[in-house]
Image 1 (tube, rainbow, N blue to C red):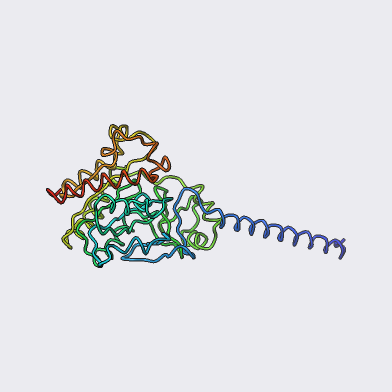
Image 2 (image 1 turned 180 degrees about the horizontal axis):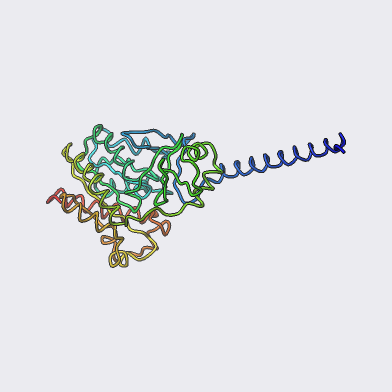
Length: 320
């Protein structure tokens, strides 16, 4: 006997309620994912305080509220030193007067322009330096080297992503569920919940080794930066920033292996270097750090600027 009209109506309402509930859950999940972002990776999206663009093939952004002051140089327009780097040189969490570029000026390095930006890897720094060198032609480029230096940042939709060492599919996106790469890309661009899901389940990619990664960087990016800086008659100084989760003495005794590769490449190219860990031996890392990662407090930024200024003066006196 066929079901009654009232029973069909009840089943229909139940089905609609289930679908509606699922839609509500999915919408809530998406809204939460959009608010919380994605762990394990770096994501930069354009907004009121973040200007995101592509320069010389690399995504770059600007989040510093005092950017105009950092790009002024001296009153007569002269620029003697250009800073390239990430949040370490930018001086995250510091007042403008306490940031490395202002402290460099206090320690005698005049007319400093600061192009460092939080989250920049070397490709972003290189893109900005390309513009900066053409505009200002400084005497020296002081370039921060950090463990994120050789990483790749790419545009996906309207945002920039740094996936670190995660395994990527043929379209260069995390895809641990093995769906079609084009479907995965569409979902990744349109859904924060999907981004959170695939990144949370992603595994590290085939490990070419830290040293191999840095050799690849040295052969391409470092060589390009050296040619760029030399081409305008400027000096290049690489400043190696240590992790701040242990004493400087320990960082010297047990250095990050990628830095050894970078130092060797710099020596071969005739590039001047400075190890902050070596220069700050004897100082208390706890007294100078803002956090155990890599960022300095005001006293630390002043100490970093002091040892960099000393190295710049040694370049002026005798070259690398």
